[in-house]
Every structure is written in C-alpha cells, then in structure tokens.
Length: 307
RNA sequence: GGGUCGGUGGCAGAGCGGUCAAUUGCUCGCGACUGUAAAUCGCGCGUCUCCGGACUACGGGGGUUCGAAUCCCUCCCGGCCCA
Image 1 (cartoon, rainbow, N blue to C red):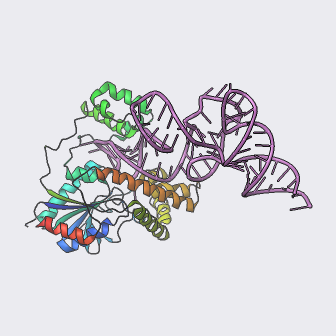
Image 2: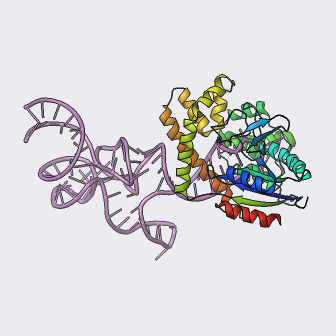
C-alpha cells in the first residue's frame, strides 16, 4: 500500500507500441491497465482499433489480455456515445478501487483529451449532451451559430474557434442550460494523485512505416469484415461508423461502393498518419511528459517514480 | 518517317498576351481544442525579406511585343494516330 497515490500514464501516437509497454509494466509492478482510447471502449471494434488480443471476463467485468486486466475496453455498444467527462468520472472510480486493492493503475492510450481530463482533474460543466438540440443546431452554419453564441455568451465567443461547429454547438448547449460557459478550471483543484506520464513515439518515417505495416496486418486479419459485421449483425449505422473515423470511415465508403478495397486501405493509412500527427500536436504541449521509446528506460523510470 | 496532342510549382491538373508567384485537389509542414477528440476546426507551402517589396520561375534556346506560362521559330522529351 505504499504507492497509494501513484499512477503511471503511457501515451503516444497510434502504432507507437503503447499497449505492449503498458502490459509489461503491469506485470512487473502488479498493475492493471486503464485504457484511454475513445474507440477501444466499444465492443466489436477490435481489429479496426488495434485492440490488444484478450477476452472479456464476466466475473471481474474487465477485459483480460495476457492475464492483465484492462479497464474501459469492451464496455459499451458502438451505438452508445461516451465522453471525456464520463471517462474522467469512471476512471476516477476505477483508480480508487484499484489503489484500495493495492494495484498500480496504468492509464494507457492515445486519446490526449481524455488523459488530460484525468491528469489535470478537469472540471466539465454539468450539462449533459442534448441530442435534439444538437441536431437542430447542426443545421445552422458556423457563422450563424457564432452569432448566436456572441449574443448569449460574448466571453466564450471571444475565445472560441468561430468556424468549429462542434465547439459552437456545445457552447450554446451549455448556455441554454446554465446561462453561460464557465471558465475552464485553472488547476486549483489539483488531482490528489501523482502521475508519471511516459510518452512513446518514433521519428516520422519510422512511425509511418509502423502504421503501414500494422494496418496491412489488420486488413489481413479481417478489418474490413469487422466493419461489415458491425453494420449487418450489430446494426450499427453507416453514419455511426463514419463518425467513428479512420478505417471505419473508409471501409464504410468501400461498402457503399464509393471506393475500392485498395483505396480504402490507402485512405486509411493516410488518415492514420494524419491522426498520429494530431495526437503529437496535442501531446507536445504537455511538458511533463517524459518521452522514452526503449522499454528498459520506461521500466527504470517507473521504478524510480514508484520508489 | 508523316500527322496530331501535349510538356506548368513535390504530384495531379487549371490558366492560354497584362489584374500570374500562377485557380483547385492531394502530398507535405505547423497549429487549435474543457462532456462528440480515431471526432471537429484553422494556418502555411518558389527563394530572400528591413514585410513595402526584391529576385528566380510555367521543358531548352531564340524571337514578336511596352508587356509572354500564354503568340511565332527551333531543339529536346512524351502520348496517340497513320506509315
């Protein structure tokens, strides 16, 4: 129980090798993994998300890979939407429970926004998504939404990206519920945990190659068939699959007959490279992240951190 | 060999006498992000810059013109057609 408040985070762009490192650390330090991946949380999205191989354990209600429990994998139907706020809340509970059981929590994933929400104890406005309102608002143009927001909350309007409908809609949604968008929390409610954030990445050319090789394997392992199955057997709409993004988007285009399978592969490859770039743009801002790509170094740092 | 169409920035592909350093798409580079984040959105992309411009550019060379990526001649290279 000596490490009652320490948490290790393994993050990095897609195909960097996070999962393996997390599992090795978990084995070494008696830990369990908490997945911070916005797509691996869904059941049936396995090959397409590059999920580690494992099985669901009904007793513990967790996904087990190489004997290591992985939380927040396979807990939702792909039809369900989930959010950073829910992730943060749920992760908080899991961490508490894990520490009580004397396990080391290892958060592993590439969804930077979610990780930050936990590490920085982000406080999100208590306003639940309102699908009806969102649908109505999404019919308007970004310019119209911006004008509307400017009227009800000039302060938020001054800092928001005026062309980003997703942001504008959420801002208006919050305003409709509680008047105005609260200022973002500035860290005065620091998390009571101590985090070691380790980032794994590779030079661009190396990472691109890793992405390509891995994607090739995934295509060979039934990635395309998985999407078809999700739609036909799982009843997941094409629209939803497109929203999931990357390969799910492009393979859906293939099923719709708009592109060939080869094109779907190339487009997915390109999208994953772009995605990796976006992830790095996010991670680079956080100077606390310790960038290591050799497992031996990671283990060494972890050991030091845990005392 | 004859005819014909074409050679434009990393690629594709517009432009067809001035307003062209050159539309557009892609690649590439940079970035934003507080309950959709694998989503969503923005900026840049000839060189140099005291940010006003300066310089080099549309296959090579030579012309016409006040002015050419755009017209003419010629050479080189490619596609297609006829031999």
